[in-house]
Image 1 (tube, rainbow, N blue to C red):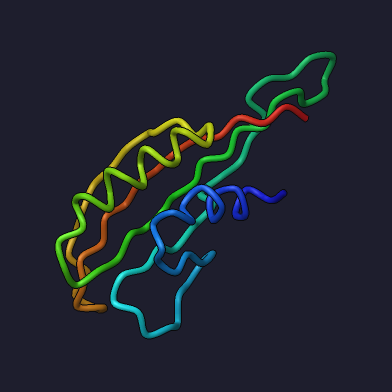
Image 2: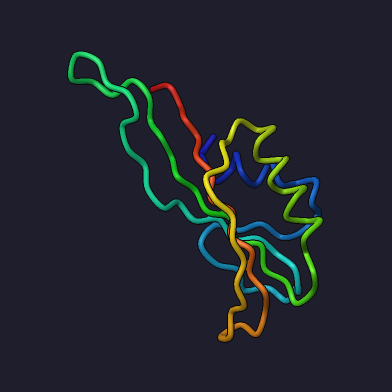
Length: 109
């Protein structure tokens, strides 16, 4: 299962559209997943043993989504992700609020 699928599955209970990279639909509340980077988190004998993925989930809405953010953070943690940061901003281009959750996942190779 891809890292994107893992996040989509984890966020299914939110009942909002969740898409990798961009969303072109009509819903006013949705999530977009980005992979910021991946790197060898642990190596032995010049071979990667554990891969780290740093992922970003953008929760976008034109309404207050604080409860949704808390639920999404808990769902990601329950799925094995480790929260790295959270912050919000107003996206003038979209005319919507965006709450950004960054989380890491470590996978044995």
